[in-house]
Image (cartoon, rainbow, N blue to C red; front, top):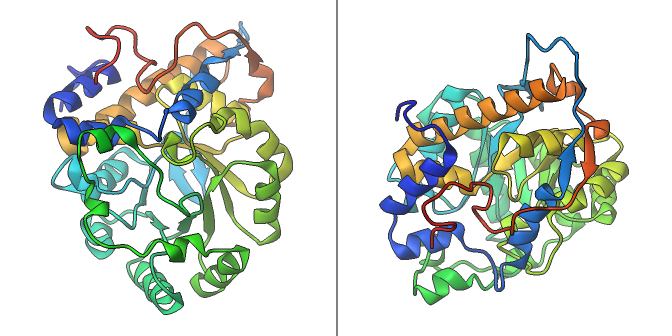
Length: 358
């Protein structure tokens, strides 16, 4: 893919042309009324910038570090199941894109190819996300495989005790790859904080908890020695009628008080979204739908182009706010505002021939 693609809305349009209806519905849909998903976007749109002027912004640096790893921009590729839906190279393509661009891929435990094959796809640090789909012996075996393959951090998803009703693919009669074989979900439903303690002890890796939505749980995570609090509502694909993640962020940041790193996902579609999240206390954001759209558009090259456009948008936003580096962003650059766009899963882009691709 070349630089003829000038906006990520073109990536979205290419992805739509390449995906069948059910595959598209799996990627863009959310649970039940899709209220949580829309609130994710709305929460970004309700924030405005407070720019400073006459600052020397001739040199800008959007890079950062996360768990000791260099990130070209404060973005990671979120763990997505069934990436083979969007491109035959699946997780290996996302990992390749992340490595070539210079960020991290959090590899899903329910995507193809195997965790070992993805690890071998490129010699570059990567993180691994785990669903608990077996007993303690199964879990210990998975942790051993993860460590043997060289993953440098372990992410545990904690908001999937039950699988939600995602009605777009249901109405399309589309069954995602991850649902085509039996999984005993009661193991995930039976998880407690004691489970996290056991995993942390055996893994001896930095632990991320993905799916934290309240200050209360963020505080408990800190008490249990979690290294990364991942603010997430699964992109609106789990509990419907939840808050947007940007609406959750401030209370969680206030509770964490710098004792753990913070990732945020849910509705991140623009470089300005990255700037807003970092300004309010996130150390990095993660992208899901954008990653899927990039893969469906053109595999690893499509994902790289998504990231390049985000980088350009972020750098422009920083310069126009009078900020020369990511670590200089803070709450003083953000204020509440009225939203002007009705939120949906692609409402960040306003130039499409159709307002929304279904």
